[in-house]
Length: 235
Image 1 (spheres, rainbow, N blue to C red):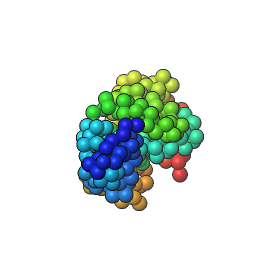
Image 2 (cartoon, helix red, strand yellow; image 1 turned 45 degrees about the horizontal axis):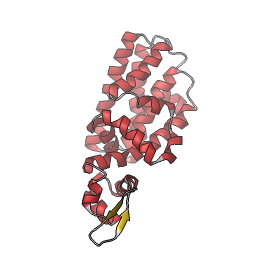
Image 3 (cartoon, helix red, strand yellow; image 1 turned 90 degrees about the vertical axis):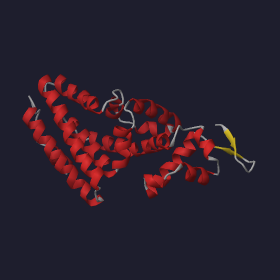
Image 4 (cartoon, rainbow, N blue to C red; image 1 turned 180 degrees about the vertical axis):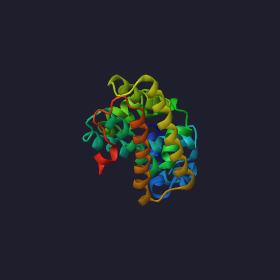
C-alpha cells in the first residue's frame, strides 16, 4: 500500500481498494453523476493527483467501482442454479438473472458490458478479486465461464454451444438463438436505459423478456428436454 502525502504535510495510506469502496459508496447512495475526482479526493483527504496515480481517469475508477454491483448477480445465479434441472433451465435462467440485475442497475451494466472495451472485463475482474478476495467465494461457475470470452454475443454463444452438445439445439439454430436473444435483450435494455424504470416494474419487465426468450427457445429447440417455460419454475 503506497503512502501519499497531501499538501498539509500528513500521510494518507490509500490503496485502489479505498478509492473503489468510497466511489461505490457514493454511487449507491447518489448515483454515478455524484462521483467526481475532486469529491473522492476531498472525502478521502488526499489530492486529486494522488488518485490519478491509481486510475487513469474518472471512467476507469467508475468501472472498477461498478464491478461491486456484480455481487448481486453472482448471488442470484447461485440461488437460481439450485432450481435448474436441464440445459434450457440453465440457458434461460442465466438470462433471467442477468436481466433482473441489468434492469435494476442499468448505468452500471451499460458501463461494464457495453461502454468500456470488452477486453478490459477479464483483466479487471481478476484484479478486482485480488483487491477484494472476500468476494471470490461468491463466484458462480457460469459467471466464471462468462469471463473467458470478451464479447457480449460470444458469451451467450458459449451457453448456446452447451445446448448443442446436449442435443437440445442444432448448430444452425444455435446461431439464430444467439443472435435473436442478444438483440432482444439489447432492445429491452436500451428502453430501460433511455427511459428509466421504477423498481416495482422490474419484475414484470423481466418476466415479459423471459416469455419472449421462451418463445424463441421453443421455436428453435431440437429437443426441449422436458422444458415447459422458465416462469413456471421461478414463481
